[in-house]
View 1 (cartoon, rainbow, N blue to C red):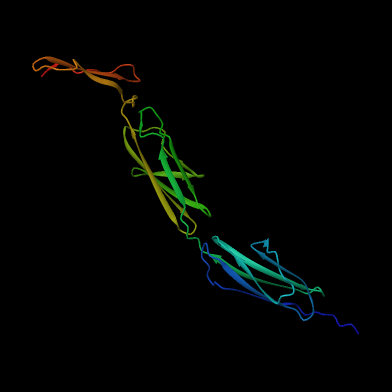
View 2 (cartoon, helix red, strand yellow):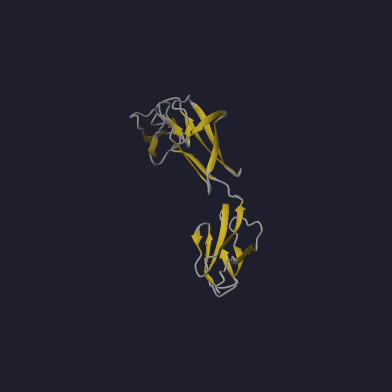
Length: 231
């Protein structure tokens, strides 16, 4: 007389942390039993196979280090030689507590009135940046498709761009940068090449000359030397 085995294997999964946090290490204790003989025990964590499962052991552990934010699942599937299958899983969610990273900078401190400022900014998150808010001085700046819609023309003055980004968990970060729009097209200061005096030794009551040599990208420099002065 042949009696067919229709009893499913018994599988239980427990873990040492009920609410794991980001970066935690969690250890699962797995117990597997069958009334006859097991043919396989397959363990996966987040869809990835966990190697080294010993079928001769009724109880074994699986340790996962450095948990990231999001949903996680450890799944155990036990099959006996009669083809009976039992699947048990342990699901949990790790809260995202990591703030986004945002940076902002201007290529220059001063721009000519006819220049378009070059503003560089970036934002990243361990999961996803879901929203960004920005202000140029007190004026809101639109944000679309990952880009800030900044003006292309500016009146002379000082401007500060402030950017604040958010992720789905409500974590936030902010950055800002400032720049000036000068009233002219020339924003490069003259360069003093040398400064000296004649004669090297002065006598009381004699005239002395203080000589300054300067250059400018415009090709001309106003008042390159001081007037003669008597000491």
